[in-house]
Image (tube, rainbow over all chains, first blue to last red; front, top):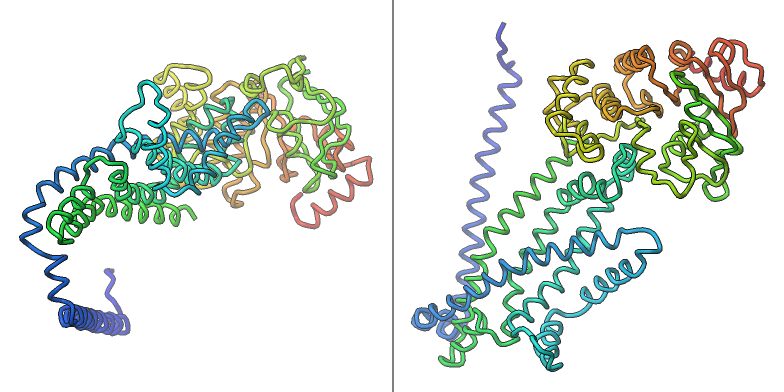
Length: 279
Length: 246
């Protein structure tokens, strides 16, 4: 015998369908109302013509876009180099902090001191210290400011990522380590095959979140001198007495972040589902 | 003696868990540890596997003192299998990878050979179709059987079983107990902490009753469970009978 919904169930289905239609209509209406209010509020404001002239000027945007894009390419390259390095550094520091035993005291102290210092130190100051302080030592083979500034970003972000990794490592239940050790695996092998794979999976969303944040902070390299998107926007602003170049750079940064943000959202959702499935 | 514990002492802060405990296990012997919660059954198993250190005493495996701080505990653990109450399978690995991890990484066997051996075992315990599944897709009984296989593929001299059926639904206990019974038939030396008195009776050559951190009495199951000499043992058993577990 095939299943046919009872009369009562059919009523429920019809009711839910009516409710759904109503919700969609309501959402559409409120979106339109809010949108109109915002647009009217902004464009109707007394200063709007001036703001549009100095922040959203199409001519200025067209004129400086190629330079800003050139600079932006530097940001992208810097990001692609710095992100993996910072992740590696963070992972290394997190693992060092978990080492037990007196032999590892100096390593542990160093790793702990590192995460404490660089999470407290403003990135801007770190960049200044690295890019302008280190060359001041006049050591042979001091790399150029781009490398030094990049190093400042890697080291700063590495300290945040280290703490995220450490939280992940600590979230793996001790019974997992006990199981690994009982099979004869060494500490290193347990870490590599049992703890870290679970830890990284668990903290993937916050890790990616930090990477998204890093994506825009590579723009701070402009403080050290290299001509990236922000620096060329600044040059454009000085040349045109117009702020539109900054808006152009801002849009580029958002566009770069979008795919990463979408990935982060997906990973977060998947992680949440996996966690709920486990219980 | 395959395993001998002499004068073992273990404390957690002020709490003395094992107090001058001595226990000997011969090759091919199955010893069941019984006793109330907190009597030190699990702690003893963890001490034997060197997962936790002891404060005093000597533990020997095949005559070699394994509590000697100069020896590498990893090498000792490679000769002892331990199965946990909560299975502790690695959730990020398939059943097959769980089983082949130690053979390939610790014993450096070829991956193909380790897989073949793992599949052989899985077929034996009727879980070959689960080889590619992840632990969370298995029932508790299936997970525990995989955990036992994971310990066995290292060819341990001694298998420690820590309340391996306590986390299982009643109808799944049987499949795990059957597996342990088969292992006994093959001569595997085992020490098992258990609440299943009926099972201890069937499978154990000797039952040891732990109380206040020591072996208060031990002997053949019929004697210890049927006609105990110590008042504390009788007290414990009467509580078990009240709970309908004997």
